[in-house]
Amino acid sequence: MNVNEITSVNGYYTNQYKTVENDNKKTSDTAKNTKNTKNMNTSKNEISVETSKDGVIYETTDDIKKATESQRKQIVAQMKKDTETRLAQMQNLVTTMFSKQGIKVTSLEDMWKRLASGDFTADEATINKAKEDISEDGYWGVKETSQRIFDFAVALSGGDEDKMEKMRDAVTKGFKEATKAWGKELPEISQKTYDAVMKKFDDYKTKEQETE
Image (cartoon, rainbow, N blue to C red):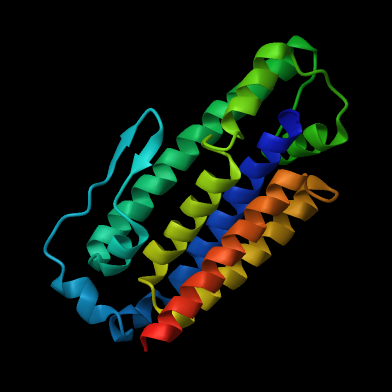
């Protein structure tokens, strides 16, 4: 396990986020016609959205689905802010590590390529931080990252089945783009994260079909 693994997860999530958000913008004009509109408009309780040292806090996936459109926008905005903060922290960590070795990077893409090459030395502090962040309960671990990606998709789509399928496609596209940017097959943790997200989509679809 090394620093490459955690940074690849960062890149995967970033690309996935942008792809899903852009896809959602294309279909936002038809949001009022989805079968979940009633649920979104009848919820009177405010969804708890705040940050802590462990990241964004909000209710369960089911509560996100039932939230009003404005509440879901609030959740998406907070998730975006939280992720950008975490990415900035990781980028600063990696950039500092590189600078100590006389390595200069001019862009985020340049940084990914340098990390993928493995042509650098990771100091103990960076390695320990990476291990902590991608651990089972870490912010960039498979469990936490896959849940954020899925909840993000639900918040954007309102839980509408057709839009959820588009979210699934967008995640797949984001994963492919991240692989391309990485320049080779992504580390195992990234594939496990992708598989975990796909399982959540599968389980969601099955549950929705059972309740129809």
